[in-house]
Image 1 (cartoon, helix red, strand yellow):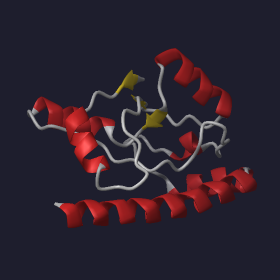
Image 2: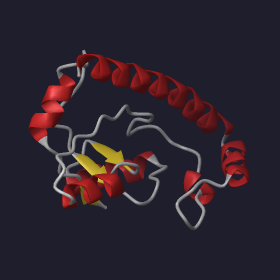
Image 3: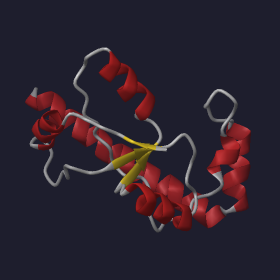
Length: 138
């Protein structure tokens, strides 16, 4: 796990388009899914992070190496206190998701799975609204 270092001014200008957006969030890049609240709290304490991000790091790193200023718009799909299904079991060797293994992980913890799906739908809708607002402002 390592901290994400992003372009603050770019992030601030994007946030100006998004009512209620928070800036200055300390993100932590992780190549593993933190499924338990205790692991999320431990990572936050160890690295001083406000959020854990699995998806943005590789792209961010490559763009920065190419000299591109980078900011990340994130919509949280789970909170630090949320317990998730054991989603790490659903990852295949290439970092993709094995649909059958995902279904099993959710079936093992159906309430956690239902919360994950509900929060995922909400966060995707919020992200879609954010992208629209950013595009309109550009």
